[in-house]
Image (tube, rainbow, N blue to C red):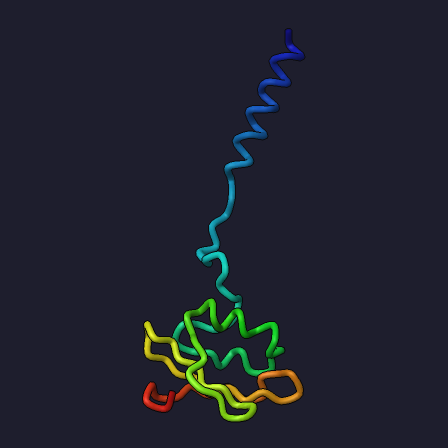
Length: 100
């Protein structure tokens, strides 16, 4: 009987610990860098891997000129010019909305 009680207490403790999950405040799908207003932290990042992160922040490609892409976040009006070189974002510059 004591053994059964110990097992039950152990299971109850394990179930209680399963509910202890730390909320870091970040949303699933949000990249670890950048924000809805500033993409400058993407400078130097691999272009192919970062594009989805930029899109997850709400940005859409507004136009492209060669290896330069202008990204616009329609909900915030933020605009970024990103130049790609050797597969990486070599330059990330935040611009006025009208430049997109």
